[in-house]
Amino acid sequence: METLRKALIAGAVLGTGAGVGTALFVLVAPGEQQKQAMLKEMPEQDPQRRDEAARTKELLLASLQEAAATQENVAWRKNWMSGGGGKSA
Image (tube, rainbow, N blue to C red):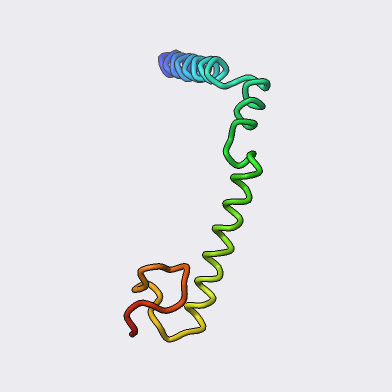
């Protein structure tokens, strides 16, 4: 009988904890309208920012392709966007 009583108390404590956690999550989580507003404000939604990120990615890939095609250590360049001008390996 004592074991059953302890099991019921443990179940009640765990259930209460789960209930409190769920209630706090519901209170803290933003609503659907607030989620949509936050998504609109994200930098990735701005077309200018998207274009800038795409251009940066293109420059990075071009630098990597150039580094793979040459024996020069491109990390030693002062200006990575231009060819040559640094120490040679």
